[in-house]
Image (tube, rainbow, N blue to C red; front, side, top):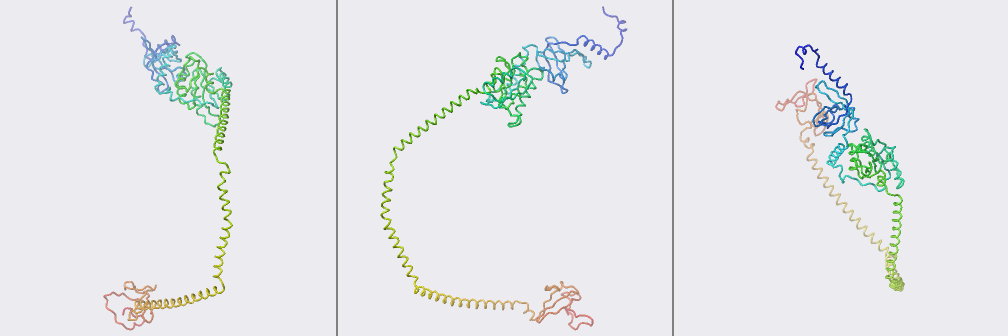
Length: 476
């Protein structure tokens, strides 16, 4: 029965905030924790604040969801658009928008089907980037010196690997301990792969020649860390050849697609990494025996060839017969040739000796003396001619000098005026009153002092005796 108007008017007044607080308290008291199953909708990744806001929906309803920044970093499974999940959290309200929401504290895929769908979607994404291409895969070294293992240090996996390596070919093993299951497992595995690649060759900690990423068998959820994108990308970026050995033979993870080799078990990974030492030694011995046999056969073959060639060569007597005959012939001719040569040089000596008798020497000396006297006379005559010619040239030059010298000008009644520095004065403008001058005439020099000013148009003063107490004008 509907309430009357009077009854509604008697209801107490409350504010919007009081109503929102009352609704919030009632919802949180009745729904402290719930587990909701639904499909993730509207997920766009973390907000700039680090929090995540999205919705959970089914075929007929939808509820807002939020994951705080600290919780999101610890989640083992991250929400993805369209993924069906089971979320655990508290129901609360948001008064600012008049809506209720779930604050998620844990999230997991809703069954193996959801995980497989997520796994397939992630596989297609990474395959589209080319991370699974065979061209990117690196060959494994035939005989590695150092093997790096990324696995749990306490499980049976590391013992199986070490045991198999010791049986086949003992070598140095570096173990990077990680968690292989749990919230931090993926980050630790990715950091271990990157850490091994960051080691410098020849450093304090040697860099491995090959890596093994291993884990024992388990369910899809247990192996999920090896399907995380950060692990796959770290394996793809590894410069060191990498073998994945995760789970049993029927288990597949995304790291298997990007690894350079996939091993069905950790023990099989150790077998892939190194050859069997006994087989290696047997191969070496077999190769050494083949090499020794090949060398022996080659030597025998060469020896037979040398024998065959030796049979085709002439004997020593045949080779030396002709040279021996020539030697005998030359030996017979040698004494005659020596006597003829000695006779030839004796004649030359006697001829030279006949040219150097005392009489011949006297004749030669007399001839040389006559030549010397002749050359001396010719030299004396040549010297007289040269002196006469030089004397004539010198006389002509002296006459020319006298003709052009200024002394001849002075002899005709001119005078040469010099200043105090002895520099000839050519213009009256270069003389100032009081300047000391030197006047050179044909018979000597006389000093003078310039007085007054004179211009070319000024009338010449009459020559006469200087006034008493003064000096006559230079230009009077």
